[in-house]
Image (cartoon, rainbow, N blue to C red; front, side, top):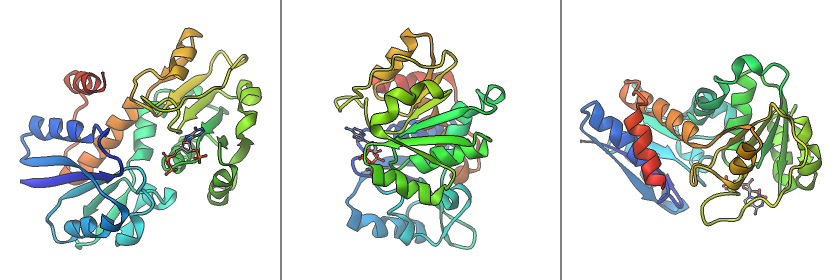
Length: 273
Ligand code: ATR
């Protein structure tokens, strides 16, 4: 029986076990994927279980995507570019590898679909948390280069600016008056999460071809998504990213590219409701 887990704190909300166990079942792989909420002091011990082959794969979520890095042997590809790791595995040379499948999740989930309409698009990212570097890299890889970012804590945006020098920084209280300039807005903050705080922004003017992407999937329709839908704006929720990042993790671990079928989507949506 191969073992997989997701580490984070908290992880109870994660749909990754549902996603991966569905695919294990579908492809008749003898494996089990579980939630593993840990505090920071336990990260090393868990990663060592990859090294000694007790565990086959780990997903990493908030707040450990950066904190896990010192315990890995090597970062590859998008993990190197973002300094953010969400997938861990052991390679043929017995090295513990950190990879990032969030970038692929963003590209496959949203950017691929808006690809031909995207030329010279201006993007606004809300938030400078754990997933923001992945959003920036996914946009750059899709040739969307005009990227602005606003975060409640200004210093955290400056930190990202050091890594991505072409990033334009907006003040958090300048969002409302600047929103009209953007063709794509991506919410990476936790605002809008079920039982959490929400935006108190009022958007009076915005482009009619605006695309609003909310990385939150619980609820499937945040207040912002509802608002933009009412205004005939194209919106996406976070479920697409969740599924596609999981698809790539599954491939890295099992060398099978799992199908995203309707039964899976229904299963995930049912879990959220
Ligand atoms: P972190 O990076 O702090 O570990 P995260 O969940 O990856 O956690 O990021 C949370 C994001 O939501 C951050 O951009 C955070 O803004 P701050 O950097 O100012 O904390 C943002 N966020 C959370 N609550 C918020 C609120 N009430 N208003 C505005 N932004 C908020």
